[in-house]
Length: 320
Image 1: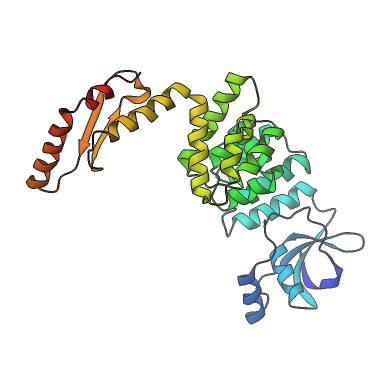
Image 2: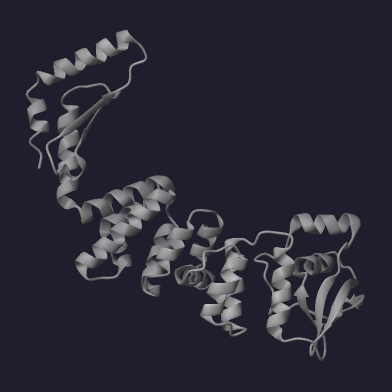
């Protein structure tokens, strides 16, 4: 490779064939170059009329923003290797000094498959492991979908609001369902466990109705919650889950509602927890309370004893 100074006007910034970075504008890098200048050469590929960027997209954009007239670069000749070799060089250059974020990994895999013709088998066997991903076809599929996905999905994933498992699930549904789910997720905030539960409910409801998973999110009750400006994103997510749960398990949901009403009629303090058997498969009840001393224990035990004498207690065992 030849190292030399190149006029920044000779560089083709529009050609992003070898780009790996998700963001090419970096404020910290801009400030670093402004203060001490360019420390490491970029790598450019000589073409007929200009130079294409192989390594150094962020450095070059910083230099251009700072109106630097020339850059120090290593020059590759176009006939020295194939395009895939140059992309591999860019990939190794990035991996040598940083961890790629999930969107960048998705970009790499998408480019390798669609721009450079790398087979799925090679992507799974070589490139997934190279980027610390599990060598499985579903992981590959999830990253392909991530790169092509709705901007909302990409934003949620980057912000940590969608998990890797959720993206793998979304890669299995149709594009129509993904659009519906994307518009819903833009209005809510879900924990990772609630994401799993909601996607499981969507699958179940789709199987019952013979429809697509996104169809349940068009239910009027769901839409009303999602469009309620008085609720926070987290509250919308919890209420949406509650509605989907009622739609999936209407009898269980009704039993839970009835159980809560009858439990409240016992007049027990909130520190005493009475819970039914999951799905009300048996009439068993579970009682739990915390006491920080003997006096507190006696007080709560006495309140339980008083509740045991009320006829409302019998009705708790009669829910099915």
